[in-house]
Length: 167
Image (tube, rainbow, N blue to C red; front, top):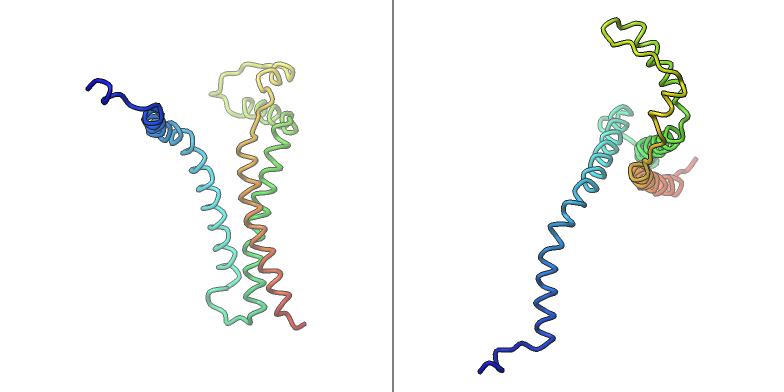
């Protein structure tokens, strides 16, 4: 009777794998939520820029030819795409330290103009020691991917525009 209650090695492996599968999603959810939120915010901003561009071009009120319809959509995809790509490049340049001198100067001017700020004069070398290079790789990659998705949409509508354009 004891021998019949023993489980085969395959059944034991299945139970171990099932218990591991149940534990992994909770750990993964903790790590994936910032990733999902970052992309959702970027896409929401991009969609907002997309619809703002269409609204400013009177896309929803004017009668348009099919070619202009595609042209306006290509423009509306291009603007958020380029916005995110240039924002990623700005983060890369800032991480390399290109704006540290400007930051130091503005900090110094702010301390001179605002009397309630505690005045602690530091040299530029001390300021640079406090601002080590930052790694913004994940946000830069997010901006590049979202920007590339919008640019791909723009390329599709540019191709459709030239397919129907008669000029």
